[in-house]
Image (cartoon, rainbow, N blue to C red):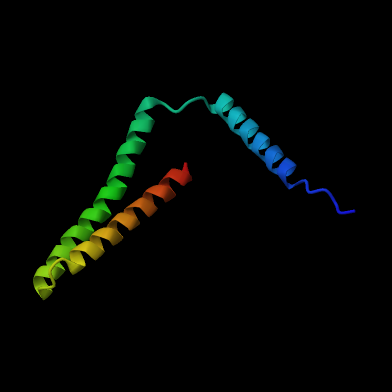
Length: 95
């Protein structure tokens, strides 16, 4: 006979342990204040907007300089947005 697969049971046990640890942390520290949540939203917004705008302006400048239509504008805007979302993701997982 084959060994029973207990992977599902381990996954549930891990989920329960994570939930318990989060609950204990919440009971110790309490909820974050409103001003801290609002400042986080503002910081995340700037983390996304700033690289995107830098990409827009750099792309427009390169397109005007090289007369390439919207090639660099599109590419650098996309890259700036990707960088901004990556920075925001890193910041969210930091706290």
